[in-house]
Length: 265
Figure 1: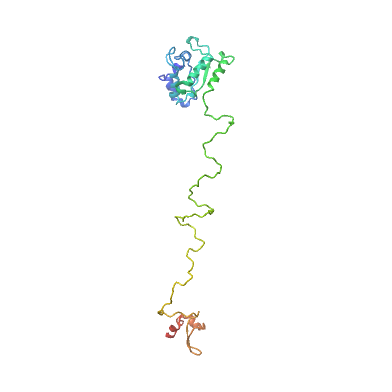
Figure 2: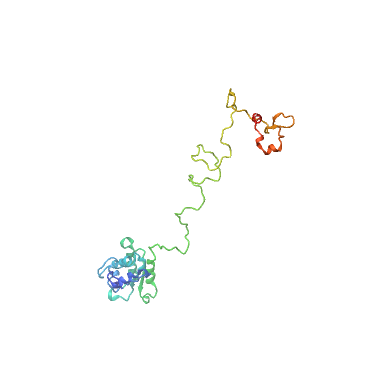
């Protein structure tokens, strides 16, 4: 009953402490301190407090701004003594006022229930009220059937299409460019060049004239053999015919690179 669900009620505080364990709450707005049918949802008069004040505390304080967990309770015909009866049209009006209250704050709500099923034998009351509770609120749950039109996703497309401008990549491409660049690279390449970087040889000698003074040391003989003393045969001094004896080969002190050195030894 609404009189037990005021914010100062111990029962209210008990429910608030357990709100994480509550799926929904079904307050009866009849036979108590509110008269939504006579006073309207937002006003008090016949009732000592407005229905809106009780409903707001339940939705935003007992629950954490969750009006969808508050199910509005009506009495169809058993509450004449407290002037709390609500026919189908009156219940629909109260629910419309609930949804439009405070700039549609409770447009999405927990719907309604009624007392008692025996007083709605043909279901006409439930049909009218159900039609009102099922409108005006977009569900956050996905529909069971696919939409006839595709939605426009904000996610990037997975199609592989080139961009209108080149991207800046830190890695070199695996294929050479079709057109060479007109400016040299600011950084040297990591791979060696396949062609020499030195300029081709000149077509004319770099020294225009031979030197006029002799070299301080004689040029070496073009012969591939070393000089050795010829102590056999004609004894002609030192020769370099490559026929030096084996003991001279094994003792390089007998061998010289030029004739002068060989003769002086």
